[in-house]
Image (cartoon, rainbow, N blue to C red; front, side):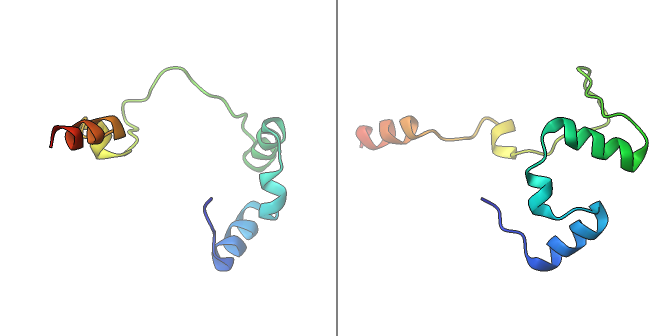
Length: 79
């Protein structure tokens, strides 16, 4: 579980307008309603990926260089 320092919590709470404890307890419908009241726009999720937006992710995953425990055990057994 990630731990957020008190300074970051205060900044987020001031920006969003709700305490983080309350935000973490919101259901998806309440979150969408909060976004709509703050921005005036509905939340929507599209199935089409935007080529201008790329998730950076883990470069090892992209390069297929993640080593699994099975691969490690096989290498150990080979020794």
